[in-house]
Every structure is written in C-alpha cells, then in structure tokens.
Image (cartoon, rainbow, N blue to C red; front, side, top):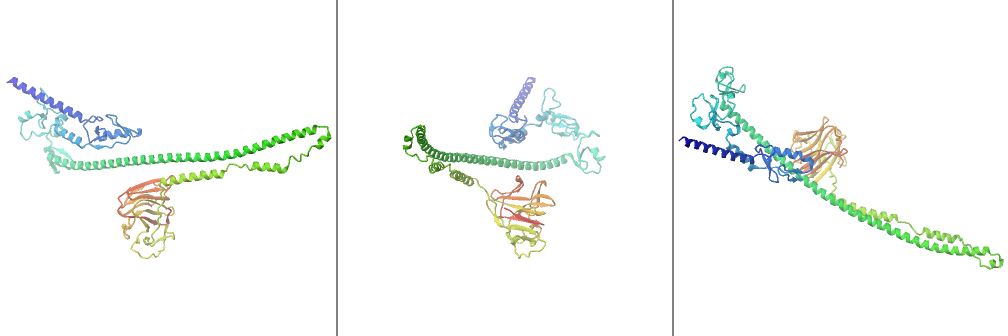
Length: 539
C-alpha cells in the first residue's frame, strides 16, 4: 500500500513537472525580446516579429536620426517608420495564458504544511497566518475566526497592528482598514463598511477608471496611427514632388545644353563667315602688296640709273599712293563686318523664354484669390473703400441700407466671394488696426447677438489680436500664439477638399502659425472684425 501511494505521488509530481515545463515553453514564446517580460499591448512589424508597443516604439525613436529602421529581432530594414499594427490575437493569447496560471505560480506561494515537496497553495488563513494546499484546506478549521483569502505572503498586513485582530472593516472617513475593536474605539461614529464590500466598490471604481483609460489609450493609438498615416502620406507626397522636381531640372539642363549648342553654333557660324571674308581681303591685299613691291624695285632701278635719256623715256607711274585707292581698301576692311551680337542675344533670349514658359506651365504658381468686401454685410460703423478692399472703423454711422445680411452688433464685414472648392489664399494688412480678427466663416453665421461675432461660434475660424495677445479662435476656444512675431501682414490659405485652413505671418521668412483641420459643410467667406483703425486686403 505504501508503495502504491509513493508511486501515485511520483506520478503526480511528474505530471506537475511536465505541466510546468509546457507552461515555461509557452511563456518563453510569449516574452518580448526587448523587455524579456510577457507582452503588453503586443504589436507586429512587417517582418512578422512581435514586441510590446512601448518597447518597440522606444527602439524606433532611437533610430529616427539614422535614416533607416531595423527590427531588433531579425535586423530587417525599412526606410520609413514602420506602422505598428496591434496583434489582437497575440494579446488574447497572453490574456488566456495569464488566466490559466494559478496566482501562486506568479507569486511563488506554496503550502505551509507540505514540507517534503512544494505544493501550490490554494488559500491563505489570516488567523493562522499560513497558506494551505487543497488537501490541508479540507481539514482546516471552518470557524468564523479563521478567515480565508487568496494566497498571499502579506498575512501580517491583514491584521490590526494595535489589536492583532483581522481587518474586517473599512473606515471611509479616514480611508483606513480597521478591526472590530478599532470600529468601537477611535473610529466610533465614523462611516464604516465591511472590508469585502468596500473592496468591491473600490474595484468597481478602478474598473471604471481602467475602462476610461483604455478608451483614452485606444483613442491615442488611433491618433498615433492617423499621424503615422499622415507622415507616410507626406513622405510619399515629398517623394513624388522630389521625383517631379528632379525630372524638371533634368529637362531644364537638357534644354539649356541644347540652347547652348545652338547659340555656340551660331557664334561659330558667324565667326567662320567673318574669318572667310577677312581671309579673302588679306589674299587680295597680299597680291596688291606683291605688285607694289615689284613697282618699288623697278623705280629703285630707275633711280639708280645714270642715263637721263633712259629715265626720262620711262612712262610716268603716277601717284602710286592714291587717296581713293587707299580709301577703297579701308572700306573693304571695315566692310568685312563683325559678330552679330544682336542675333546671338535674340536666339539666347528666345530659347530662354521657351524654357521659362515651360517651367511656368509645369510649376503651378497659385495667384491670390481676389477678395472684395460686401457692403451689404458691413456693420453701420464700418466704412468700405471704393475699391472694396479696405474696411475702416468709423465713429460716424455710415447709414448703410438695412439688409438681412448686415451685422447688427459687432464691427464686422464679409467678402462677396464665397469659396466652396479648390485651393485659395488671400492676404491682409492689419498694421493700422489696434484690435482685429481675420479669418473665414460660413454664410449661415447669425447676424445679431453674442454668437454673431466671428470666432465665437462653430461657423467661423479666425486669427485675433486683442489686448496685445494673439490667438486662433473657433467655437469660443482659443489657441494662444507667441507675441514675439511680427503680425502686421497675414496670409490665410484654404484647401477646401482637404479641410485645411492655414494662417501665416508674412515676415521674412514667411512664418507658418497654425493649420486648422475641419470638414467644411458650407461655402466660406473671408471675414474681418475691425476694432479701431482699418484692415486692407492686399492680395
């Protein structure tokens, strides 16, 4: 009989060992290779390896400056920041693994009374301050003073340090766990709850907090994914523009080289023509020079003769240095001509004009949208200039005709033009106004009451200067901007389909201030608010 029991115990321990080995192998597969702990929010790279989201994100951050991203596991390279896709299946596997593991395996709590071999504890007795396995738990005292709990090593913490009694209650006023003697003593009259009930309430609150944090984390993950997608789109867009610009400059270089060859060819042709003319003239003058040399020798012979009859009978040679003959030769020299610089410059100018015209066609140069102010919307103390470009505050009522579109309370005016598609920009000079707001709004904005001021509703987006502070305002919410920038001239850019409205300060260099993203549901008008001075639309 003793042999049979020993055999059963050995089989039991062997099965526990096999189970532990299998569990250890599985756990090894569920460990992040960076932190060497169980996966927390596992994500997958393109190469298929998994990591904790926080771990791999930190690794990728350190690789940003190198221009290439590598997997810590297999060193697979990627030129762009890898998209971190959450591995929901692996996350569920980790959760199921943790749920199947008894708490004592994680905490290392074993039965106090199993001294020959470690047996996992099923419960801990707070009264005995001991942990028990299932076998010892069956024979354990069931009396009320023996309080059982999940396996724990902090048995002493579950007893009152003063009365050495089990902590059974929770004082909500002092936020303290107390025993029965404490409740009748220093905590008398306080609101007291049973410890387990207070524990469940606290866990319920924590679960609510956890749920909110989980929701916020998911929202943050979505924002990160959107930003990563935006970064990929920007990188792809930049790559496309780089490719186009490279092709443009390659084509410009090719056209310039062809133009250079044509102009140099024209220069060579003219040089050859002039050179040929000069060569012909030189040849004629060489012949003339030889003839003159021959005549000179004959005259020298005559001068050396002593017989007067012979010399006098020689025919008269005339004036060999005739002025007309000299002038004729001078005309021939000047008539050879020179390089036609005008023709060369004309060819160069024509060729460059063709290249520049092609560049202008290729490069989209956006012109400012022509904005005119709508007098029918202007407040009665707003004067509109004759060219409809300037809005000025006036202490004298302008006696505008009553119209439904007119602003009744605030010094505002809208543009006549409404934009419902495409890309546009317009510029304003606000240097002559003390308080101002410039931006865009829907035509459905109300025209009277506090909600009619631009920026104070969900139908308008404006940049504002008030009390020497600058901000972007939408639906009464402000984004404050630094005061140390020049804001005398502003540019407002609209990309209607993309849902973007951007504000720029036209300093040197141009400074981007902020881009608002929204889904536009109505056409947009330019909107001005003038508080003293004037605002002028310049572009």
